[in-house]
Image 1 (cartoon, rainbow, N blue to C red):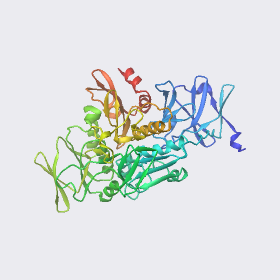
Image 2 (spheres, one colour; image 1 turned 90 degrees about the vertical axis):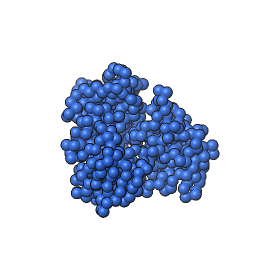
Image 3 (cartoon, rainbow, N blue to C red; image 1 turned 120 degrees about the vertical axis):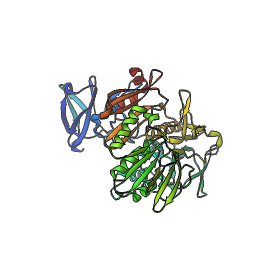
Image 4 (cartoon, rainbow, N blue to C red; image 1 turned 90 degrees about the horizontal axis):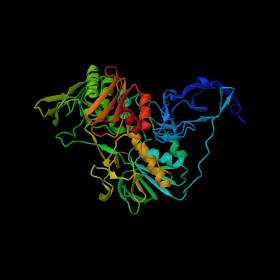
Length: 510
């Protein structure tokens, strides 16, 4: 028996533990959080397994089913507060759990983790094909093995290398010199070998929904017992003269980011076409590299449709204070080469010269391989509450068109894609499924982080509590007097509660 399995550490008095938030302690050299639930105390790992966020800063609350949960402060992974079990990603692993004993009003924690029971292997003769190696695809593979699936897993995707977190493309990656920049892996490369997951470097040409046949661009084909379509989106290149000229970039893949980073120098000028999240995040990152940045957008205020005028104006002020120029209410009509520079012809009859153009005008779902009968009017693939397309074919991520409150919609955010993948895997293996949590995303621009939670309906009012100028606020998006969404900055705990029980948050904010 290992000595750590018998060593109990006095972690403090029960009376010192708050019931509304976790308490940080150190057991040996290991960070741990203590959670008090009335007379019970639990000890869980103190770092989120996703990116190492300090869990003592997380949200301790109850979800819609009354289960006490612990929510990561950074990216809103949700864990069962008693056992550390993963409920919602982006984490792919549970929080470690440690034995606890209460003696004379004090908490004793044993250093050795409680080893979770392994799932009974199941369906060893089946094949699951995962089409896509992004957030949804990797989450599906991890969930299959976690639930005990012992069959063959084949992941198909066109990008070389280990699957990475695509959200970093417009954030940290572009902000660093190329020799220092890297993209975080979704899971370590060893995960795929350890769990016997086959990787196929190819693109999907056709999926036969009735026969569950996958035909690849190379001409190869194979059949599977279950298929998860998770092919994501591609960047839109608008039909403009000159859009295919050198130094006109999009930003959707590691290759895109690497090519753009190669072209950027300290005195480079870049025109970003579009005023959405990717465009603004890229603008902030490129300014950190010293590039001169101009944002050209159709709207007079960036992100007005997502965040409202007040928050959008404050973001524009933030960018302008960091040297970004805005050309609002304008569209690009053509791009042409002028010596070593590019010339943009704008619809107000003015022209803009720049070294580089970055197109940030949106993305379109990759669904060319799907039968016409399963395609939705919004460009995606229709799915039900189980993320099922038809039979044993499922879809998750950007391409999944689902119905929420009578309205068909797609959500193009990574956490939702991972949640959908978990639902699909639970359904294909016959496990109970949970409902899809409210979409949540975050954006980092310079040193300011904003979080959003909501189902993206229209809104007619933004009620702001706090100091917008200092980026310390919680805003409610309202429609006809009802709260339909939230935006928070420096309010991570409140956003954690909102993420796990959105209806209750809306009702409480009414």
